[in-house]
Image 1 (cartoon, rainbow, N blue to C red):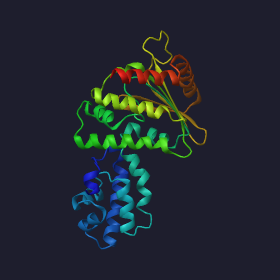
Image 2 (image 1 turned 30 degrees about the vertical axis):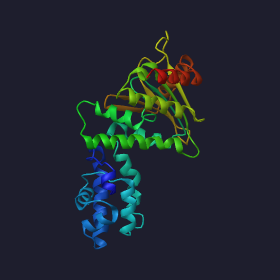
Image 3 (image 1 turned 90 degrees about the horizontal axis):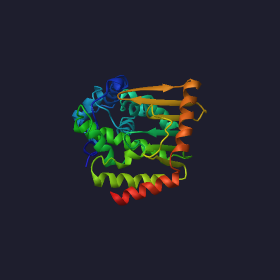
Image 4 (image 1 turned 180 degrees about the vertical axis):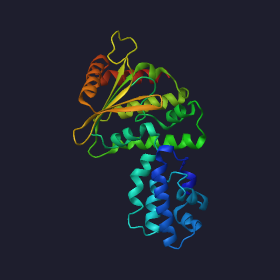
Length: 279
C-alpha cells in the first residue's frame, strides 16, 4: 500500500496556508532542478502525480515522512526537511496551534477536563467518535486527519526524559459512553494503562463532591524547559494563552484545590476499573 493510501491528508486550514505555499514553491523548485516530472517524484515517494501537484500548490498538507523523503530524493540538502515542524504545526486548527507547540516541548503539563476524555488519553476509536459527532459535520478525510494528529500528540508519553503530566477529569466523562460500549471499554482500558506510568497522575472528580474549585471550565497549565509557566483555556473554537503571572497563578491555585478535592490517583484508577467492569 502506498503512503498516500495509508495516510489521510486534508485540505489546508486557513491559518496554515502560508507555510504550505512556501513549502510548495520550494518543493517544485527542487523537483524541476532535479529534472523530474511529478509522476516520477510520486513514484519515488509513494504518492500520485496529482497529490504532488496539490503539495506544490499549497492545497494539501504533506506528512513529515513525505517531506523527509522528498528532501532525500531531490537532493535538497535539508532545505525541505526544515519545513517539517512548521508543516506539522499548520495541520492543527488555528485555535490550537500555539498550544500544540507548547505541549510538544512541555516539561510539565496539568490538565482539567469537563466534557470528554483529554486528547492525550484518547484511543483511536474514542477520538474518531468525538470528531464524527461534531456539528457542522466534518468530512471523512478531515476526521481521519484529526484522529491521526490527536494520536501523534501522545508521543509526548515516550519522550526522554519524560514530562510530568497530571489530569483531573469529571466522573461524568467516564460514564458518558461516547461511541458505544465497545469504544468506551477500550477508552477506560487506555486510561488504566497510561495511569500506571510513573510520570502520569490521573484523578477523577466524583459527581458526589459538594465543593468544586473550577466551575468556570477546563484549562491546561504548561511549564516549559525554560521554567516559563503558561495557562491555556479553550472555549468552542476559540482559545487563549495566559502568560501573565497573576492569571497563571489563579489557575494554578484552582488546580491545586481541584487535586485535593478529587479522588487520589490510586482511588481514581480503582474507580476506572469499577466502571470498566460495569461497561
